[in-house]
Each structure stands twice: as C-alpha cells, then as structure tokens.
Length: 225
Image (cartoon, rainbow, N blue to C red; front, side, top):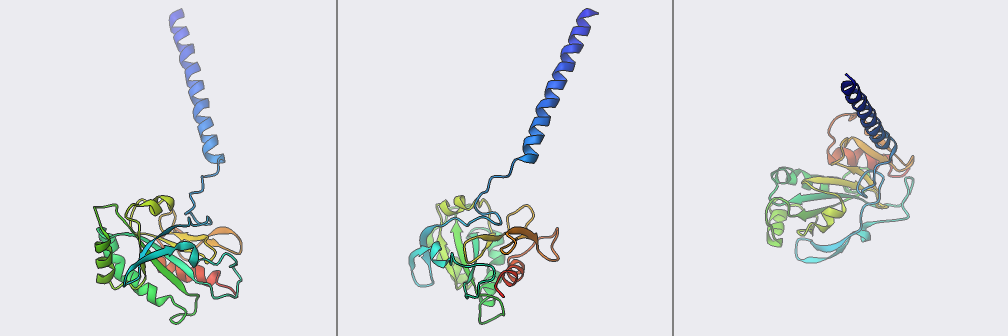
C-alpha cells in the first residue's frame, strides 16, 4: 500500500512538473516577437548584386540602384515600386503564370494606368532540377517577358529573401520596404507606409491575393497625394 502511495505521489509530481514546463513554453510562444526575416511585410528587402539578362546580354545588376531611400508615403516624386518574382524555369506554376506576369509588367506603367510606375524583375533560381543561363534566356523569350531576369541559380539571393518555393512574389516600396509578400501565412496583409503597420487588403480578409491585386491597392494607397 505504501509503495502504491509513493508511486502515486511521484506520478502527481511528474504531472505538475510537465504542466509547468508546457505552460512555460506557451508563455514564451505568445510573448516573444517573431524574428524578422527581412522579407516579411514592413521589413527592408535584402540588397543584392548579380548578373541580369536584359534581352540582349547578361550585365551586372544592383538591386539598390532601383531604390529611392528618400521616398515617403506622401512623396510627390515619381519613384517606381518594384515587383519581384522568384521563379524556376522547371516550375510548372511558373510556366502557367509567366504570360500573365508579363502582361502585368506592361500594364502597371505610368503610361498605362493612373498609379505609380512598377518595375518588374524576375530572379531565376534552381530548385526543381539543374538549370542554366541558356534555359533562363529561353524561358524569358518563350513567354515574352520584357523585364530583367536575374541569375540566382546558386540560390544565394533566395536564401537571403527566405524563399523556398516558386513562384514567390514580393511588392517592394520605392524605399526598399517590403509592402507585400505572396508567401506569408496570410498574404492578404499589406504594409501601410503612412501608419507603419500591416493592414488587410480590402475584400481579401481571408482569401488569396494575387500580385496585381496587391499592386493596385498598395501603390494607390501609398503613392502620394
């Protein structure tokens, strides 16, 4: 009988200790801020240098050259926003969306619509199978994408941007802050440059948002007044 009581006491003590342990984990989980990856909404996009294909040849490219660090939400300057696509030439989804992305790149220019100009760039990675610059050029030509294709076949840029799948899309403010990320758990969140906080895009509280929808809402919201 005594043995059973001792065993029961030890069991109860063990349950108490385990309960305290898991309670501690929950406290940490709900009170610790997530680590900023640099590619989430409101974070600064990682700067990179690489070679890019412009339709005629491969040339050195500096992402920083596209930025206007003096830009603010009410700026009157005609500073362009930047749409960044990570793609793999062997990715079926990338192939399916390539024509549409090309159409968007032509649509969201200062000459074609009332919002600010949006510069498109594609960053070619190698996730699915071995690729080459020749395949990247062929892909760009096949889908008539008239914007820069950046060589990231060694996936260094993708790692810095925390990209693990394709296609992945980002909308970057002129000052380099990520305004929208297609890979977020809730990608209907965008960045309000005026309030400096994330917001729900209108009509997409729990639905999937496409790049063009993010462009139309965020560039007009933060494109100056």
